Image 1 (cartoon, rainbow, N blue to C red):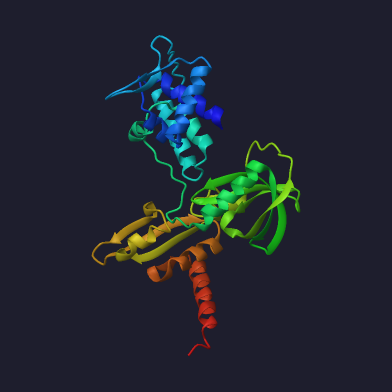
Image 2: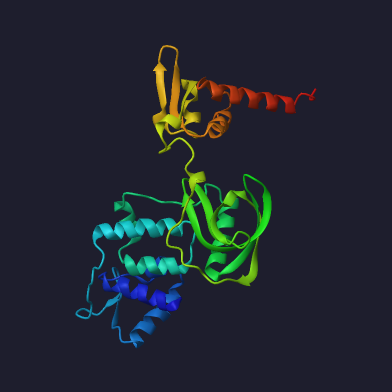
Length: 315
């Protein structure tokens, strides 16, 4: 919105000695002509703007009128920049650009160079299916539109109508937190399990969400806070030439070199769910061998037999 851009320009001018029209245009992602019109609007509203010509010229607020109010500390600005920059990696709307300018009047390149973190939620691929889905779902949330979706769950593949409230990014995956009209309760839908979806021309009343319950199904894996007595101690043997491949699936801190002479190592961790561990081992292909527990070894062997049976008629 224009008012947001005007406030952003005012914030920049109030905290810089002078800045060029070109720099303002790039900062707010608009044309130079638009910036000139905005400066005229600010002038007409009583903000005294002066123009400097020649080398090192630009525009600024008249000396003496400027009042600096640094609400945010240097560290605050770095943290705000990191969060907003991460959000802008998937949402390039002008409202975020204007908000960035209002809260962080310094050049973003300068703040970026001093920040400790970089959050980029975008995909490596320009034609990312997930990115397109997240963008569509976000529009539905903003416009309060219901979504008709076909979802693949652990139990079945079903169609339902949901009221989208939030997008959640957790442990490298996107989720849609929505009120399911079938079950009459909130739940998380993993975005890559949404087979099809349609943004409906039906609005809904927003419900206050104070907390998201991720539930027990989202805590199963390597890190379990359950009673140690109920955990399986898993030991996998691997060849060190496969370490790089293995770190795509397992954190390196679980990967240990046991015998450098044989160039072999072991992966050791605890899990509460044997089926989860079986799926993990199979995803590691022929890069690991189960040493313990025996139940996991037998589960993997049974699964391999089923896979082999699928191809028994191939010539």
